[in-house]
Length: 332
Image (tube, rainbow, N blue to C red; front, side, top):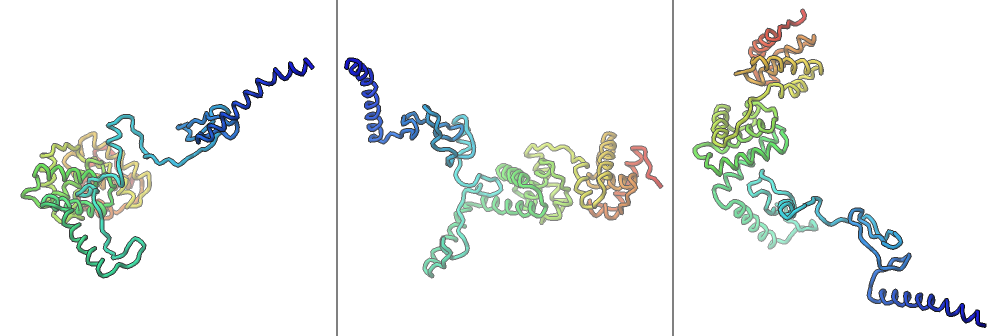
């Protein structure tokens, strides 16, 4: 009897502790506290690196891989947060309002594709008219809108990448801000800005190629380009003829050995200063023709000249000068 009472006295604290824990868990559930379904503790923590909710007591993973509604960029200070935060599409310099605009569709249909009533047609038409009016408030914005549309058209015709369009737009904006447009045509300044951007971004496009897609002649483009570059302080290195070799060789469909040899010829003759004062496209075309002779691949002079938009006489004179400079003669 005494042994039974002693055992009861020893187990009673354990029972009381279990009862207190059970009542405590019930109180937490009543308060809406989330408990671990395994160990029934409230030690649930969030791991931001893994994107998981884990019980800190037993390690049970409650949820994982949640949808991240935050931005795709990371900011480490307030300045970076202000610079990177945005809503909608990013800003672009290639639109006169930098992309901060609204567009009213020309189709008179609602969001579900149903046709609107006649009364709504008139209302939408008036909204379109006012939309066009408020997009360009003054002559400067109308000038910029037309110029940027011209740059966009020429970029599409030349097939140059989008960074060139952005750079050309920035150059034109600077020219407009410093009142360099006065006395010159919008098309001429826009084309000059595009040609400057091509050279600045190391995109091989000759003045003749840019002129072919422009609405002004080559003399005006060259004159405006020199004026804009001088006034804006844009210092550009002379165009390296080797930049044109890969594109010309691709259009001529010549062997890879010819392309490699043409680049070697240009590098060797450039070190001797032979390219100074000569057209880079004509110099590159002559190097390709000379490389074809040295590699025993027949490339018609006329085909090379047409690809480079130069004359056969230029190709003939330049390739002879190059072969003499590197002291090589083609195999007969």
